Length: 369
Image (cartoon, rainbow, N blue to C red; front, side, top):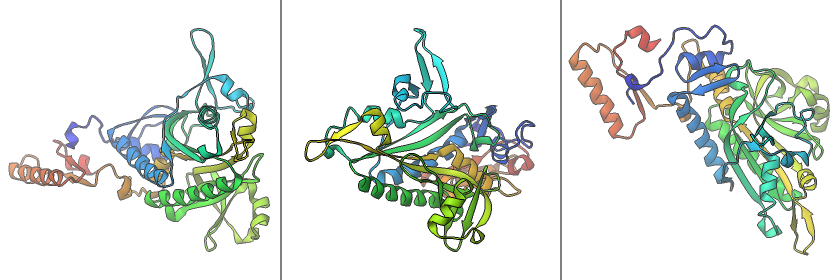
């Protein structure tokens, strides 16, 4: 790709109203465009990074039997009313609107209920289970706070996966496989050394859920870690979790962190609320078990920038860099140099190397700032 053909431009300064380091750097480098607080457009450069993050996630989800689909963002109330999560008092991040016929709709902030509704039409027997499906989708959440750049947006890209099972044992087994897949994902994204599987608040079915937290000064969470034992606990469950796993609080170090993933066992809670059942080997109706697994794709991109950037700018891990090579052509007034750099560019392209060629008629300082 010739950089002269990119419509985006590098900037020396970030917007005055942008305080988050990740967004400042991404805007200056031409990866994102800020539309409003918590809402960003992704330029061709930014999209290449997002697509590479998604591809790494896709490969690992496929490797454990995940099937990719895409659900609609438009959510009818009745799907969510059966579980009580249509209420703004229960879920306060809904964006809701009305059709021209007056019927109300919500814009999807998550898809557990939608998945269970759909799968209820495909699951009849224990032979139909287990099922694991995932999607990459733009989520919409009416967040009160949207001040951390692309790490906390009102609109963001998320990978959400849902697994449905005939037994708790099967759900638990698959849950553990997802944990290992997530570890591989964060390792490939360049965050593995500082990302921990943490104990977090649970729900009706489990005492604890799990989050994947990356140590990050820009994060909004507080994590207690023991690096030697590879143990991490969220502040919200510190007392319960530390006693549960048998570790003293004084063995844990407090650090700032950013959530980059979460996984949760609903068990039969959703199945019971929504009457999603299967027939077991004896022909008896049983409730389906559900677990969900999320990764914020755009948030991960922001965390990578926060963690790895230095005083000179963004440093992308090779696996997600928009291009493998950035070729900078200087002294453009010298035809011999232009011919030489053009030759390098064409040679790299012919070999299938992803290369961004800065062939702009611009000052040296602008090209390397």
